[in-house]
Length: 343
Image 1 (cartoon, one colour):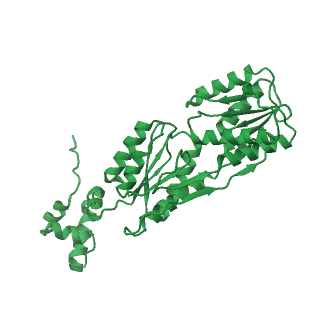
Image 2 (cartoon, one colour):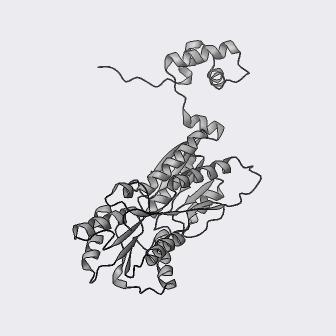
């Protein structure tokens, strides 16, 4: 049986070259106090022996890990996948890596993840709060300890010291519903998510504002706030809603791409033509709406750009002087209504 190979340590290199551990450490850091010939011997020995530096120990001495902690509510949401892709690309361009953790839509998991990151694993934190997050003391506590924080997407209240990156959900929704009204639609339904989540509150507000502005009737039986956080049950909720309305709407505004696609799937199975019988608009434009038949009109949300922007703001905080208090920035990214076959 082959014995398990032990990780090579600094003392192994020191023993092999008959020099001190401190000299090995300085040589690997290319410290000019160590002679060039000794540095070359140490580096060659480290390569030959397969030495890998201990990043945790290195970060303890330097006070820097070059790792950014990212906390998102869920892994399976295309929006968060795109945001993380933007964060990762921007971070790598600036010599940082990212460590992603999911709060699983739980305030307790969010708080636990923050505590874990606080213990020196990361240089700063990017966070999208869960729908359960009503108090922000845990985030303020991190900021007060000098750890840079940037928040994005679902932000219930402004947090002093943390940069914010958002879109104007209510204005985007207003634009979508206004477009349907100007197309001559009169029975416009709304399908959104759990109302505890700020983004869904704002998207619902945009729907209501547009309907009121144009004196359109608002029917309670044409409004659905999905309660499930599971895609399978979201499908069940939307099917039940559409099959239960007394008169089918002539247009439906949905708050996510997923809701939009599930809506179109159900309508087609019920025998309705899209868009002649019912027009549908989604929110996100994360790829699937473009390939679905018919293709789905969407509010395009700049998810990748949002990821790049939150990473940029965080890394800018790293470069600020410790003597200057951070002035919070709120960045609002633009959305766009992308017209396709479903309208």
